[in-house]
Image (cartoon, rainbow, N blue to C red; front, side, top):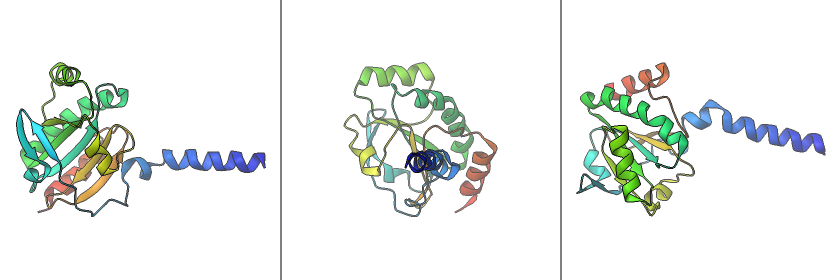
Length: 168
């Protein structure tokens, strides 16, 4: 009985550390990305306004250490894809507007961000932890879901985005 419990625990731990779990959840691939309202730089927009671009929709928070760790990588990713009709779009789940604004300023965020203090839109997407990222193709379909922090400048990610951005 003890060996069975230990085996089950090892299986669960192994499953959640496997690259396929963190690097892409196939159950959402191909689904149309749910439209969400956004407020970017004081202007009302919607996710569908970005149709035609590859969107890296990243749910994050200032109080989340892995989100803070991932931020420089997202800034570099946005620099790399913005001239190829791609964009990183950050959606913060922070309650505190001033903490959110300070983080954007202090970290030199170069991509559009919005705030979802109610966490409604993050929950609608099925976000279970932060950061969580949805890569949306030019047609508005979810291509990939990434759970947890990611090195967006790894060789694998560079190749992935090169291929995705080359598609019409």
